Length: 93
Image (cartoon, rainbow, N blue to C red):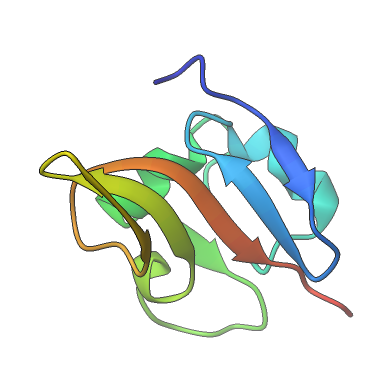
């Protein structure tokens, strides 16, 4: 899934394919961020991203994903399985 890369600006949020590194996303002013060499999907899976506005909490509670769990596609908060797309709010500051 590391070849699954791309960012789509939807106005108030971003649609980011799971293999996209944070280095490619940070210029869009996301509301959260991670190690620039980590993938966005990996950050959700492992819970290793940070947040803007000094807010605390898990990344999986702050984003929506499109993913597959037991072969069934789902959208919403991360509940396990394979992450395909991550939706991230943009900081409008």
